[in-house]
Amino acid sequence: MNKLVTYRNFILKIIHEYSQYKPSYGDVSMEKIIDPVRDHYQLMFLGWNKQQRIHGCIMHINIRNDKIWIQHDGTEAGVANLLVEMGVPKTDIVLAYQSPFKRRYTEFAVG
Image (cartoon, rainbow, N blue to C red; front, top):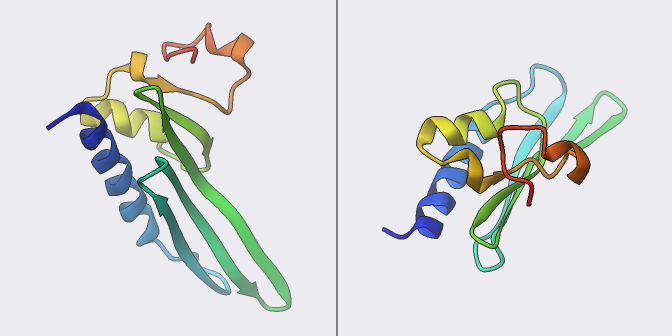
């Protein structure tokens, strides 16, 4: 199996796992946004808690130039850590939520 297919499968597995969790408050659901053609993946939460609208992003991931770009990570475990545990080299993971200046001080790819 080629690297991109493997990376897509890893991302889908993480998104599917996190989509199973339901917040303990309100009428909130999880929504997976998956565009495998453009390699764009998101997990959103949306709904209502009493009279307050709940809407936000849990994770936002892209694949660009054969690297996984983590645009947003709202997980406790850390998407990058989960990907490394699955076998993705740190050199293929970009912490895009960090400024390019700070990325060079991490163990992960700069871009």
